[in-house]
Image 1 (spheres, rainbow, N blue to C red):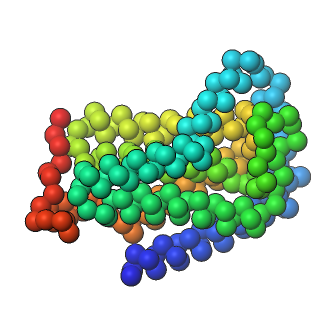
Image 2: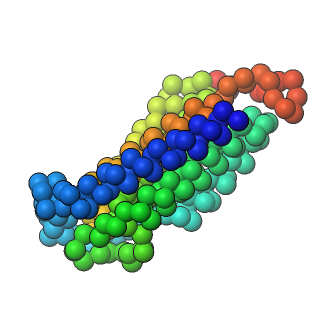
Length: 227
């Protein structure tokens, strides 16, 4: 029950804070230095587009497309259930992914920020430009993977490899969304922050990997694998 209350309260606080930031960016700071810097960067990226970068950023974006997140999240939840032989880690995956979507939709439905007025390389969804949903989803999905790997395996090389992935993929996705004219820099930054904060909330609420030697299905779970 405490975990449920934590998740609900955290979601409401996050939505309130991000809506406030979105209001500032779209209504107060739009014609200030922040807004001008956002627009200048968008125009700079458009002037430096190339065919190769257009193609590369197209495929990078797919690393956190809705279909990718759904498929990878489902697979991750199943693998976690088999690896730990209990539901806690799978619930962690579900809470992180569904919670990110819920908070993102809560924010974007209340913030009315137009997308950059530059040629878009993707079809613009009907949601607000703030925050970047692709970036938030990338932080959560690949952060989930890194956390579960670190809790399941006692291998520094493996753990650090996936930590690097958890940082590199969101950076690449965020940069791609900027390049393709779909978001401002501030949209991407606060999208990443939204994903990171919600991932921490889910981690605290679910505590994946704890009590590794006691599961509902039996007296013990397999010990962490060593490599």
